Image 1 (cartoon, rainbow, N blue to C red):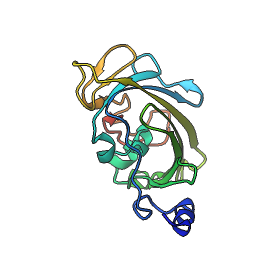
Image 2: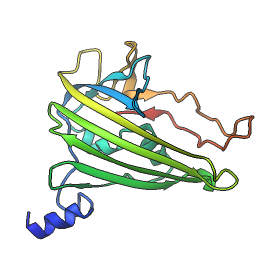
Image 3: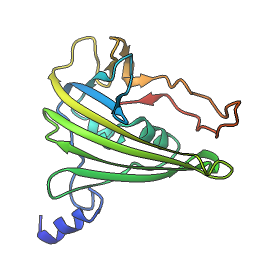
Length: 201
């Protein structure tokens, strides 16, 4: 790749424009430790889950789509985050998506680094800004995901399955969102998007 293209890619062109592809994790069982704002993100009572990754998992669903906020945005018609690879081999990505019914916008940005064969680190920042009459309400979160390759997937896990921290298996990685179907709180809180069943690969 020429120096000119490298500079263009570093400036933020998409991976396809730079002749690159998103990182692909090694097929097998990955243990993911997840924190939100520095605290364990509880999926099955613990902030650590096992995920069975296939040889084409990340080609179909890039690792940049990992976070629940990203997947909810995609479910509402947003495009996958635009990603680019930096000169040091790490990846950066970003996306801005409108909330349903003109409620506001969600801004996402993040980075991913590692060799993706034995380990990786993913950081996703999300900010939600509502439109009037709730324009004063904003939320900002930082999710960190540390992935570590464990070995082949055990017989009880199929590709895409997730083992939660309490040992429960989530087929296909589908975890029911406790806020599914919620529209407006009785206290007058801003409307929440109709959250789909979330999937974490």
